[in-house]
Image 1: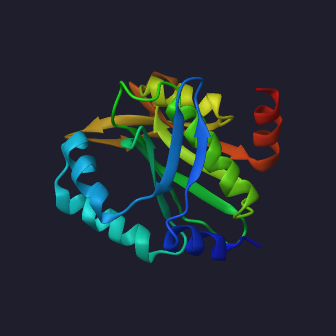
Image 2 (image 1 turned 90 degrees about the vertical axis):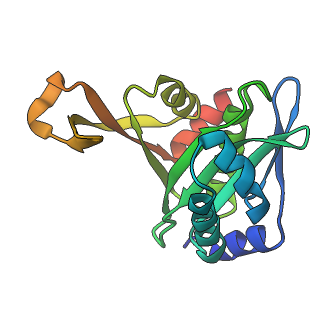
Length: 192
């Protein structure tokens, strides 16, 4: 059974997880309303979009939005959501906002958050999806132990990509569905 009390406590007490790259400490903390401004400025999305996201993450006991920072400057966000009673959850958002701060910080940050998810919340499996042409993110996910379980062909319709299995191996772009089990994480994590 997953431990949702850990999620509630982590968010309510503004707990901090920490890790480090070869050169810098990386602090991981829950997102707050104060984070809306830099999130909006760095993504180009309206402030209201992030207010809705942060409000949802604050209210939903099965979602945590983490902010990664170094030298007291935020550089990334990671959202863990859809935590279910069977021990599954999804990484919904992972984004690096400052390319010049904490090189390697997203990798060590995601690994630390993943360890927190498996050890403290007692999750069994994490999943995420990513576009096949998002090579930087896909390398990050693979470094953290995620494996591609399914590759879904996509077709462009207007401004959107939609699934079209009929395209098979001839699609211009794919949606990659990736998973990481607790067992695999420890196997990969202990090797590095």
